[in-house]
Length: 334
Image 1 (cartoon, rainbow, N blue to C red):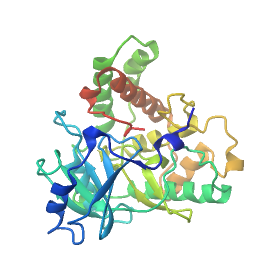
Image 2: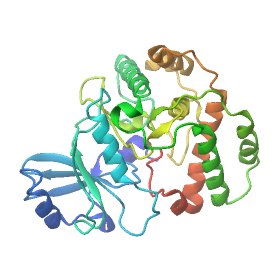
Image 3: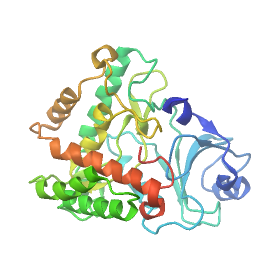
Image 4: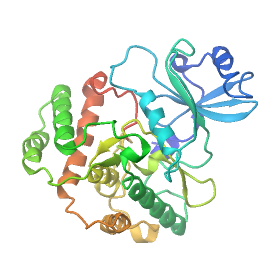
């Protein structure tokens, strides 16, 4: 059986239902993106995305097109207009993102809304152990990944015009309530541990939570690493970004350290691996480094880690039971 790296890396011809009308697209791009009005070709990135994503190539070079899936969708899902707004706000920050170019709200061009950003060459690692990479490079990449997350959580949403993304305050309580309801609606069979978490997590909500800008699904699989150097050149997939408690974001990011390997390839895992020989820090050391960079005390992460696993399980249940409720149509959560 192939692993995540083999299954999700690279590009492929778009399947029939996701093919682009390249003629109509070229006509639209011509006056807006010089050199991209003729002779377009497109391949689809293989990695799981809830919003299909393509490499668009023309006389002026390569760009990335990200679109809503075609067909009838949940109104609150696949908000690529929101994602494009976030990318535009972050483009002037010290968070590396693909440079936004164009947004098209006219669904008649290719069958759904879409946006265009610069293509960022590099490597995407779908496995947390980054097989084949020298340990010194792994250490540098993990350090950069940590540093970027700490910088992201240091951003004041108001300073980049994103303070209206979500209601401020009580993020953990609201988020927990939402995912508990979604899980219950999607439940296929009663699972005692999930019912226990739905009962216990609200009783032990963290006090004094911060409100910062958060990514929502920050992980190695959503980063582009430089083609040859051990540094991150772009952070991808801002669909779940919002304003909330940064420790929820951190806990979801930490899942690779303690989650078990998954034969379905939905998740990646470092469990049981010799981390020192790989050049990957232990989870507690990684947390301490993040906190030092943010100049905050090392928190008790137990509630956050429990919630991270609960939320992940609720997402998986949604995919299995009623993906339309969650607006999930691919592997974008993983």
